[in-house]
Structure formats: structure tokens, C-alpha cells
Image (cartoon, rainbow, N blue to C red; front, side, top):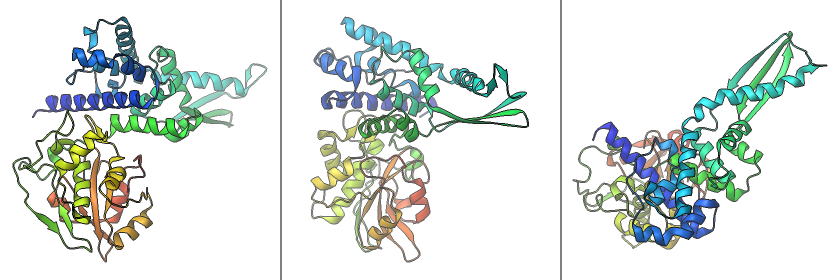
Length: 409
């Protein structure tokens, strides 16, 4: 597969994931016009078959802003409200496309607002000024996610001035005069600090984090993340790892027995099924129920834990574990509790970010710890990685810092 087609597939999967969130929001009563539009027009959408699963967007960054296009079939709809909604989305696309070019003008605006504070009778207290910038905490994915919650996805409110306000409000600064030079240090807030500044409730913070995770942290497995070209053609057979306190039944998500089967409607278990596979490993290892990744993937999709286009919602792990009769403890980022759990023979599902195990996002099983403090794993995408010992620091450093549902462990 060439790079261009691979990029297009990633765009489609992200688009499908965002569309799935909007549909979930409609049924859950969450934010905004997108949810209300889906409530109002979903029967028409289904009847007309206009949900596009293959669309060309200007870039992955713009997928969320193009949500109405994805749902309503671009200009194919005839309902006036849908047409207006789609037109507004296209305007917002254009605004976000030029967002990087607005940063300097926003900084200039902030500087202009600071300078009068260092004047006496309209005369500057300084001879010159310098501006130092430290930016990057709130990237454009976060800006889209936070903005969508702030304006409740009301496309009439999310105009150019609203996006400029988003850019302005994420900045903070300090300023002082030394040797007649006014030194202005501008930085952007962290996502959490920015949402605190905006007065977000915890529910709103969680919703923004979910949107961000869909845009930025897909669970798509690339060939580089697996054992190589044998995927989908390999029957891994009956593998059991027994070099730790708890013997572990191993499954590989790309196994020929299920790797090519659909997970939900828009992807396969081999491509996006690390979540169900990790959960199947734990259930099959700790109970008499020898479920397979296919069994768990079916249950996940039927019960709303499949995030179309991006993998699985993090809540699959605690809720799915309880469904299969396990006692699940959420230990968050607590490395001390993680070590204690592994030392006592418990299995831990870890939600990983880019690093040694994945280039995007990934679920793996931690199955033990050695006397030297190294961690044993069962990686649903790789037998090779599952046969190695891993320094604890790699696991804790590469675990997803924004994991939901009590994760990353």
C-alpha cells in the first residue's frame, strides 16, 4: 500500500470515529447542534443511505469540523436545515485550515493589550520591548476538541471570531522591565489549565478529552506494529505464556482465524481490535470462559464500546471485564499499585501511546514482573514483543497520559 492510500484510509477511519461519537452524543443527550441534528434527521439519513464512509477531507485536522458533511452526504441532502448545517461546516473548515496563520496576529493582539500597562501618562516606561514565546501545549487537535465543547458544536456560534477567541484565551503571559527593556514571556496553557480557565465541568473535560483521543490517538495497527508480513495469514495456534505467576492464554489480533473479520462496521479485528483482543486474553486466562477476540469484538460492538474508525472506547476494559465476571480495579497512573498488582499475580491491561509498542494508541496486557523489576507483556499485535522483558520505565513512560475510564492501567 502506498503512502497516499494509507493516509486516505487513516482519514476515513478518523472520520468514521468522529461520526460515531456524534451519534452516541445524540442518544446520550450531550452537546450541541450536531447531536440535535442527528436526533432530528437520523431516520432520513438511514433511509437515504447518505452516511459516507469514504470521504476526502482537506486533512485529518479538519475531520471534526467536517462532521456534518460526513453525516449528511455533502450537498446530496435536500432538507434545508441539513443544507445550512453543511454550509456552516464548510465555512468552519476554511477557518480551521488557516488557523496556523492566525497565531502571530493573535500574539500581536495580546502584546498590544499588555503594553498600556507599562505606560505612565501615555508615555512608555520602557525604551524597547522583547517578546519570547513558548507554545505547543494546546495543539490544534486540542483546540478543535475544546472549542467544540465550549461552543457545544453550534456551528452558527463557531465562526472566525470565535476561533480567534479560542486562540487568544489559551494564552497566558508574564511581563517585567529590566534595564529599560520590557520583557514579555507568552506561553499557552496546558489543556487542563485551559479548560479550568474556561470553567469546564468535569463532564465537559471528559467530553473534550474523548474528542481529542478520537482525533489524535487512534488504535490502528500498522505493519510496523505487528510481527511482519505473515499477519492475517498466520494461525497462531494455542499459545500459553507460563513464565509468570499467572499462565496467560495468548491471542494475536491479526490471527487468520479472526484478523480479517469485521469489528463493528468500518474496520477489522486485525486492524483496530487490540482492545477486544487484550480483554479476551485476560478473560480466557483468568476464567473458564475461553472467549476469543472475535467473541469480545462482537460484544463490544453490540454494546457501544466500538469507536468506529479508531478502535475501542477505553471504558471497554473495566465494563467488559465486569461483564465477563472479573473484578476490575482502576489504578490510573499509580506505578506503585501497578507493581503491587503484578507482584500479586494479577493481570493488568495497559493503554499505551506511541512508543515501543505502537505508532498511535494500543491496548496490551501486563502479565507479570521479574525479580529484576522488568515487566512481562502479552501484546495483541506481536508475539515477538510478548516474548521480551520490558523495563518498567518504558511501560510507565509510554502509557497514555490522557487515558479515560480509570486508565491507563
